Amino acid sequence: MVQQKPAPKYLNLIKIKLPPGGIASIGHRISGVLMFLAIPFVAWEFSRSLSNQQGFREVLDCLQSTPVVLLSLPLAWSLSHHLLAGVRHLFLDMEIGVDKTSANTTAWVVNIGALLLTALYAASLL
Image (cartoon, rainbow, N blue to C red):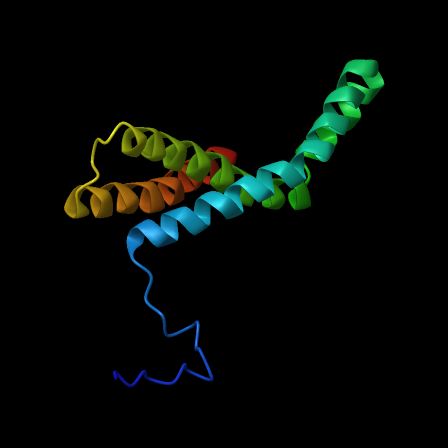
C-alpha cells in the first residue's frame, strides 16, 4: 500500500512560477474580459459621435482628456495581447509550434509583443 502525501494546507500563489504559456493564457483571458467590459462605453461614445456635430465634438473632447487617455492604455494592451495570443492559439490548433521550445518562444513573443505594441501606442499619444 502506497502512502500518499498530505495535501498542502496553504498554497502560496505568489511563489508559483508559471511558464510563459501560462502567463500568455491568463493574459488572453484578462484581455478578453477588459475588451468585453469596454464594449458599452465604446458603443455609447460611438452612438453619441454619430448623433450630431455637437455630440461628435463632445466625444472628441472626452477621448482627448487625460483620464480617458490613461484608461485607453490597458485597452490597447488588451487588444494587442488578445490579437497576438489569438494568432498563437490558431497556430497551436493547426499543430504548428506545439513543441516545448517553440511554444515557450511564441508565448514570450505574445507577452513581450503586447507590451511593445502598447508602448508604441503610448508613444503615439505624445
